[in-house]
Image (cartoon, rainbow, N blue to C red; front, top):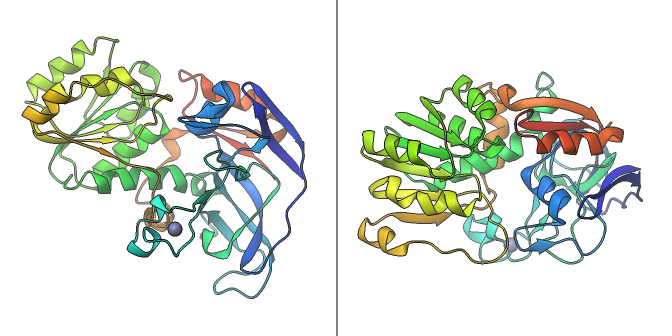
Length: 346
Ligand code: ZN
């Protein structure tokens, strides 16, 4: 089967790979559409993401939807031909985290298309992928595969909003208008935020933020002057979603928050450590918390998309055939031209 495989930084190949067998409890899914994620782009640019480096050829892809081709044994609700979104998380289900509803922190997680463990877990930018049956969430016939494939990044945003605690009636800041930032915006609005400001270094994605309902979209320079001004006008933000993973962005945040506010770190940073003015966090009692992937929110995301309660179409910026994956990755890197680029796989 044809697959999009990383061999190292800037060495992306569309090549034939062997399909794996379907074991008991598993299903084979024909992959229709796959979205290119910021982490896929990081593997492409740098050969790694955060502290995870590619050590062997890795098929990328974890934002996918398709149709069931093969089932090992009869499984409730799943039949051959059923259209599904794939949850890329395959937690062990037995560790203490899995048993307390925090599957995203599973000690034995197998996440599609990730170099977080060795050997790597191969991804789903391939004509078919084998997953555990519970990773398949059926989708209605009317839901396009392109929208269903946004269930995964939307789940990341829903999880971040849950980590933020109370969002209803709050003043919210989202730093970074990439797909995750824009979906945090949508999720915060859905959660009842009173006012949402979105910032980015690039104006083009901010226009999309405005279309998606942002009350304020601010182009920031490296100095974040405008932002500081906005924060002082509003007496600080109650909640911030840091979705850039840029150390300078996080460093600027504590002073933009109202005392007692909460920063949710969603963006992944480059490897290594980063300095942070901790005394400001202490004296202003700012909460700084991490948000990693998602757990129960995947099914919730698919439900919201299926019911049309969150519209992700403004972030969809193009569908390219798998054979043009290289072009698609280059286009996805250009933030002035694209937000979410997807591959048409079969
Ligand atoms: Zn587990």
